[in-house]
Length: 351
Image (cartoon, rainbow, N blue to C red; front, side, top):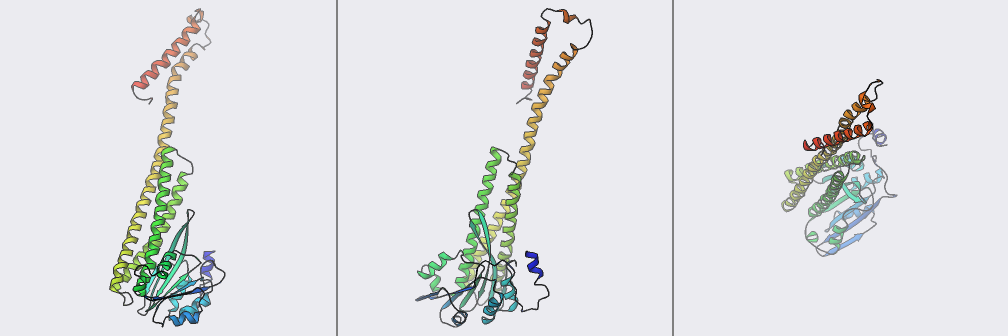
């Protein structure tokens, strides 16, 4: 399905907008949040005209667009805010890798917003456009990780209402990065569960679980690395839209992303070690089985010789005439077994 969507875009003229992704909401919605140190207004269902006017107001405006499937509407929103058509194409392409652009009048950044829902990792593309006094955010569906941030703005908690729009830009990125730690902790819990399972028993599904988790961690890392590089680019270029004070906070986000990447590398190494441990455990179990079978075989070799000897079809075998010959043979075989077991134990071949 993904390939078909990408192929259908081939040959289209620049400026022609096409949504690459899955439709996740029925209709596109625009919400407008305006604030300053002494002003707060939230419009849950704003119009495009009102949202466009907000960028000229004296307040900081956060315009959130939910639903990207209406490509024409997204194009109309982007053009009304003076966003380059190539950036609009990136916004509409939900399979696009995280990236960023500093175009002097605006800053564009896209990343993957991840959340954990009953052990299932859900991914959604988040695109941010930072202007002089406004911030545009584009999401694929309702619901995000910014509810606490909105509550802080509404209740005037913290520094948000006192800082500029670039600080809001930082706080959104910081919230996304903080949720990456939750995903990383989830991977860590899964690794510990697999390790415990390996210690207790060696299930047949363990290699599949390790490979599946390893694949998830690799995909997780691929989404974080370009995001980290984009933040590093903004810190290096020092755009006039981002104050020097906010750049310090962005450096902290960058450090968090570096830390998460290092954690994913450690987790991948741990999974590789667990896979080696699984293979080693299976080998040890096989060696134990082979050792038992070898001991049993070694014990029965002399016994087989004895019964084979007396099973020969010769008429004159002296012991055949003994009255207690059968008992003597049993005693001999039992003594042989006891002697061999004792010898194996002394040599530590048995334990």
